[in-house]
Image (cartoon, rainbow, N blue to C red; front, side, top):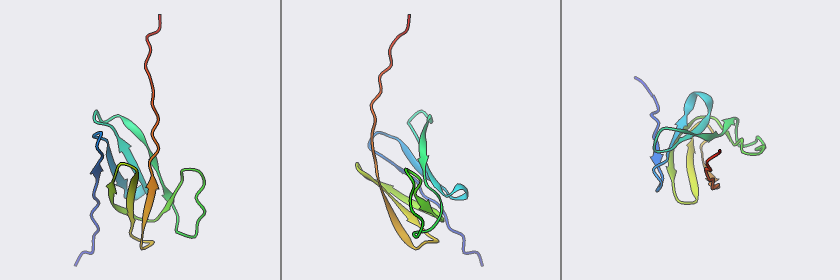
Length: 96
């Protein structure tokens, strides 16, 4: 009998995909063209102090994205982690 956990991903209103990387204990993000946006998370438990954007997780499996937060099921630590999203704007200019 296998007690295997599956992972789930979610897509935000802008089409960005958020998905758990169980082997590296983090959440990864890509845009609609599969361009890398970034990650958050590292191995740890709820007793670890988060340093910067490194949020300790032990087995992120399921997640859901709202307009302000990402909710991650941290299976080994038996908790839901709420991460506030922060957005940055950028502009592209032509160089001559």
